[in-house]
Amino acid sequence: RCGPGGLAVARRLAREADVILENYRPGVMARFGLDYQSVIKDNPSVVYLSVTGFGQNGPNANLPATDSVMQAYSGLMTATRDSAGMPMRAGLRGIDISTGLYAFQAVSAALYRKAMRGKGAYIETSLMEAIGAFQAPKMIEYALEGRDTQPLGVPVGTFEAKDGYINI
Image (cartoon, rainbow, N blue to C red):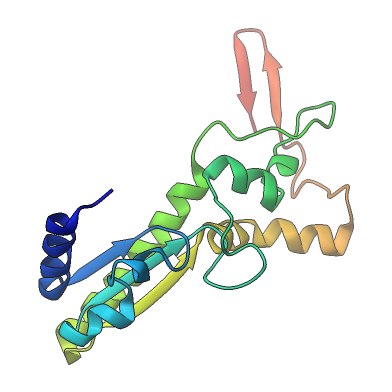
C-alpha cells in the first residue's frame, strides 16, 4: 500500500516521465489519479503503456491473470499436451515474455513519434492479446484442419537416439 507521501512522489514522477508502464486490472490506476486521462493533464506528451490480463473491457477484464492462467485459458496447454493428450503447462513464461516484447516494440515506436512530433501516446495491450497473436498460425490450422492438425514437414518431432534425443 502506498501512503500519501508515496502517492505524492508517484504523481510528481508521472508529471515528469517520458514513459509510464502499468500492469494492473482496469481502474486501479484511476483510483490513485495515475491513469492516462489524469496524467496527460500535466504531462500531455507522456507515452503511457497499460498491460492487463484480458484487456480493458469485456466479461473477463477484471479477472486476475498470470502466465499460467493464460496458458490454460488461451489453449496453449492443449498445444503442448503430452503423448496421452493431457494438457501441459509450458515450462517457461512465454506469455509474459511475448507481452513484454510486443509492449517494448509499441513503446519504442511511440517514443520515436514523441521525439519527432512531440506527441505522446496511450498504448494498451494484454496477456490475452499477446498469446492470441503468438498462437494465430495454430488457430488457423485448427480452423482449417480440425483437431488433428498435420505436421508442416515429415519427419518432424523429437526422437530418441542412442545418446539422448534429437529434434528434427
